[in-house]
Image 1 (cartoon, rainbow, N blue to C red):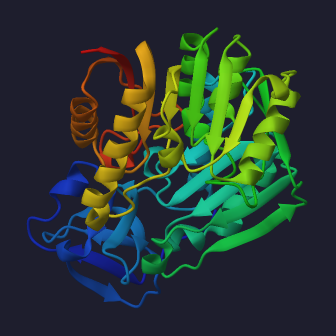
Image 2: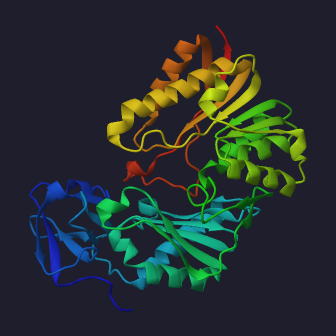
Image 3: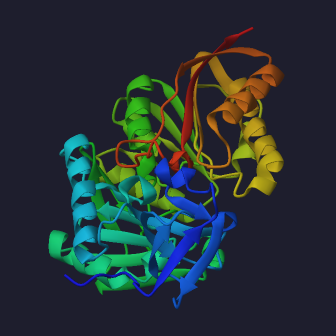
Length: 397
């Protein structure tokens, strides 16, 4: 099998800058590189050498990015299509081991954690969404698509990636069907419940796959209670609660999302007219007086999209948590989430502490759920952990 490497060039690190690679961290930043010798093109796979001349591994090189090299191997393993197929096979085996058999929507590849830096692959039944966040991985798009076609015989493969970080990688936002014909709505199963998703125009890759375990948690703790699902999108948390007898209110600013939530209720044999669906701004809605819910879910979009926005985003998280903590019934529960990688666990808990203090109520932390098994975090790459969740119990002071 032919190599995918450029053997005419190499990366040489500065003295003492090889420690992170020896610790298996997959990124080499621009400040750690002494030279790139030989002819290469951005995105090429080059060998990386320590200053003393020993080979450390091989990775994608991008002179335009602060992450100058994204490592594919630690050591001398050849990078070819066979390596990509083995890595995808390992990722598939992990999901088959840990995901329930009545679920056919999940993340197949989670970037660096699955040893495929810059690559995201999400499955929705027979339809797949791929995201290429690194120039080098984007150049391997044909090989990745061929492997998916060979392994899964997909109905459709959609390339959809639109993050602002693409610019630094030299990539442009993409929405392109690479294979097959994509339905307007795809149908999939999650824990034996059914959902529709709009993969082309919906949020993220169409659904919040990373909240699967938290939805199941809410389905249990909200059984028979009054649930307010803020930033409800297409109603995932609400449906898990409703099938267990909860009275639900789904709240989102997007009319198309609310409409699809109602369709998802019907898809699961639920009478949408017996539940509330409200199109409104969550902050404004929670400021309305004389409301009381037994369980409130806060799963907002990332309020902090870069380090320079941490202070402003933290204020948004504090405000929304303060409002929810004030509104929830005595002894009620709040599930609060942050999907921003720039807000770590310590900061998130500090934010919720300040919110509880301003709300003037006692708050207990019952659980700290993180990312599910199909969104693993490499112990060597903690940057891959982005989802933080706290299950809170609120009582009168």
